Image (tube, rainbow, N blue to C red; front, side):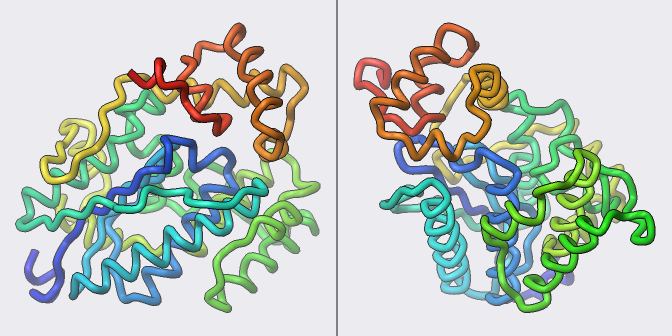
Length: 310
């Protein structure tokens, strides 16, 4: 491990929660904007990234840095930029993340592998997948393929809309700029379902900063061995306090389907409604979904009543 990190880097597990437990990610665009911001910041700050796992209401990252100050500045860049972009997308203001973030230095291969197992297995622990590589937003599958969740991109067979979208993404990436919501809305508009999946994979591959070579070096330089290790070992985190939530996060995947059935196609439009209107929607959802009242409050960004918090 000393050789991999030139004997001068510290491996750090970063953990950040949302303010009030509200959701941070609702759509593919949210994940993509966050990922592009994190990857740009990592390149700008000289960070080596071993894992990024954005969950519905929190984020895990494992990075290697030369100085503690580099980590602090990286965290500031990522979360402040995403908070600003996310707030703009829902017409809100104020803090999006908790004031303080969790940060724990990991020493030795065993501790690092344990933390990586914890990060990559987070979606499985929350009921979102059975294997870490099956969940797109662990970005693990991209260690083995540039298009793990879509058909291969063959430019001469792509529609003009998709080619134009890829050019727009490339322009931002080569200019070292993160993605912005208006551009994503424009580029995804008019694409068929297959093309949308292709574009998501193209965006992730274009921005991806995860150092898979170093990651896989911890598992015999084998992607399959890394996946097997994650499947066999749930991992643990003893140095960072993560609020325990025994409920499955599958409810957060069901809610948008229920909203669509009720005629609400655009979740970001719902989040722009006044609290009383969102509460009326919450009451309707409560009767048709499996989500708890607390989960519905978190999803619709409504203050959780004190009696439910207990």
